[in-house]
Every structure is written in structure tokens, then in C-alpha cells.
Image (cartoon, rainbow, N blue to C red; front, side, top):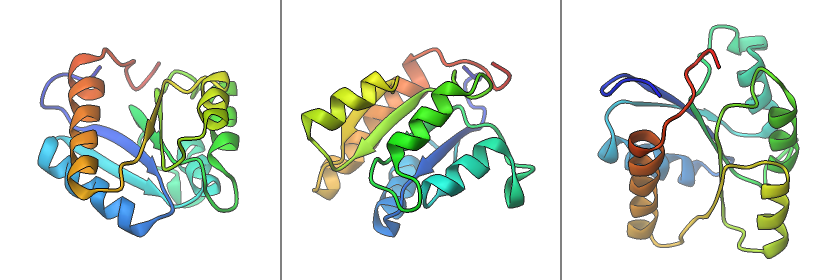
Length: 148
């Protein structure tokens, strides 16, 4: 993990502008050292991670927050591609989705997701969830460095 106070790059893969805005605000409140990058679909997420097209100079994220239901390429496909890529597979992936379906939970873990979280509907509960992500994944957990 990066040292305390250092900027942490996080990739949020989310197609809902409202959820993107809420996540940005919640991380700003919880942790001023997060640089949140946003991909609005799976194709853009893979371009970001593979550093292709307009993403050539983009940083490697230390953590990925991935929605399952995305246009063009869904989150399951993105998760599969990341975990099969030896250069990307060590990046922890948190599934952050509205689905509470057992089949989605089981399948995500089968595809090697590191965590599965359901997005709360209420604003305060959503903020609290982001704070918990911050406390555990960015403060407590030991994450691989950018060259892992």
C-alpha cells in the first residue's frame, strides 16, 4: 500500500452519473488523498487499465470499484478480463452494485472479486458505505504497490 497521505488512484466503473457524483462526494469527505477516475462502461474501463486511446498516460489504480450492470461490456466481463491479465490481476476489485441476487454474488467471487457490496438506496447509508471502504481498503488493508 502507498504511504499515509500519498495520493491513491481509484478507478470507479459506473454508468450512473448520480452514483458517480455521490461516490466522489463521499470520498472527498472520507479521504482527501483519493484521486477518483471514472469509466462509464466496461470498454472505457479496459481502455483505462490497458492505457489505450485517450488513456495512455493514466495511472494504474490501486483499487477498482466495479458495477456489474454496465453498457457495452458488463462488469462480469471486465472482472474476468482483469483477473486473467497478469499485469492487472493483483489490483483489488470491489463489486459495488445494486444487485443483491445470490447468483451475482457467487459469480463475482468465482470470477475472483475481492469484495461484493450492495449499494444502499439511502444517501446517508451510501456515504457510510464509502467511508467503510475507505477505512478498510485504504487504511487497514495492505494493498500491492503500483508495480505489482
